[in-house]
Image 1 (cartoon, one colour):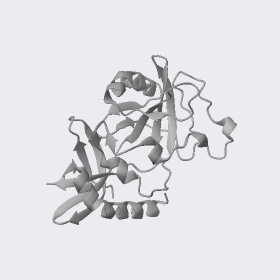
Image 2: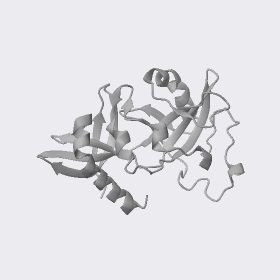
Image 3: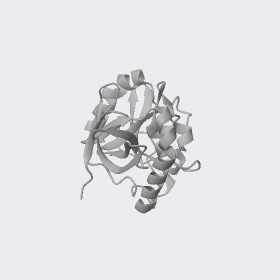
Image 4: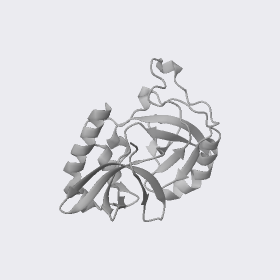
Length: 220
């Protein structure tokens, strides 16, 4: 049986179609863990050619400047990039991200020399920890989504490189998080609302337990 779906809306009026994966009640309030129906992606950039570790693009002004270029690159691969609530998403058939690149030597991984947006693999050297990529203050606003993903201090959150492209001579990458992108929300008359920092801190232990149980059952 398919999970029910809801539409999550952020304070900018952007929407995101999600499935309701888990629900729980606390002090008379209903909460849920949502999972985007379409694939979440993040944009990263390299400061210069000598930098191995890319930086997460968090500034919405910069995202707006490169969005049409990234969108065009995705269209070349029959994927539709959308600026949805909480995260960017892509719609369309993706390669098998978890299996792609398994059993291959590092030298067989895409070397990043192509600048036409060709789909490539993220080799092991590009894997970063959640602490390297995120904090809980995105553009000055608390984002409980990121905290929910990092359920263990030593957990490594993995990303798969989907495409690289250039905008005004600067290199960018579109990455897919391989960890489930759970979004904790409060349900008000069946409609999801994002949690504020205080509320998230209060119910975080229950949400973490629910998330860890789900990850264990899914084999993550």
